[in-house]
Length: 387
Image (cartoon, rainbow, N blue to C red; front, side, top):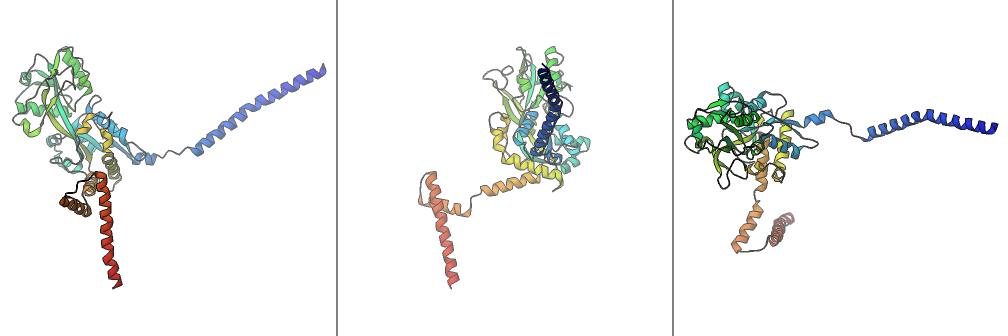
């Protein structure tokens, strides 16, 4: 009996000793794992993360600008480059933000916005501080109105929302109504508020300048009461804007089938601050330009905004100077695309002989032509050395 008691107490003592040691063992194991993971995981480098970051000021949450900026981030973000899209207040304010706001390097703006800075005595600053990277796409003018209004001139004297002060919509609306001689009572509610006020009858029309299709307009529940209003392309309008149209496919609830709405469009561009050459911010812009231009085909893939298909990277913008890294990239691409003297000579020979072969055969013949030409160039050198 005493043996059983002694055995019981021995086992109990062993269990107690093990239970006391388990937390210590567990702590050692955990600390070992943490130490091992700390040794294998790469250390975060804040300096490197900041060195490749650029701020891109865009537009409202429901507009095209923010989707374009999001595409820039989704395609270009990597180890050495990070694009931070920012919600902006429109083209005119975006220009001010690029010129003066810390953390903003690039912005999406309308081509007609810079002219309005003269009213604030900022035109000289704009010419010195602003450059452009590329012309983007055309932005269509959308005017949502009650179906009882069938002509834009009927908006004279009626309440029309033109978006908040400083926005591209506000700017372009004033210019267009002024050129057409129409004097509506303009309100400056934000876009989301304007749709609610349309439905309540507080305003009779709302203007939005943005690249089609605009999600907020496409999702606007009209209940058959509203439509998109046509804008005539005439007189002074033709000097500043482009003709455009809005289709039923863009806005099924606002445009009748087989009856596109004729409207206007204004060009947009990617503006950038004119940083001093070889400065830190200048080098960030250069990395952005190299990545953006080199990978532009990725913006044309499914899932990206359809407006990318309108972009011509090499297109000039009247009155604007292209930023130096962008011009340098385009110059290099133009030189690389030029046919060499050898290829020109080969093409002239083939054309003069009327040789018509497949692309694969033509490539083989061209390689043989180069080899033959190299042999001819080496032969005279050998003769000269022997003499």
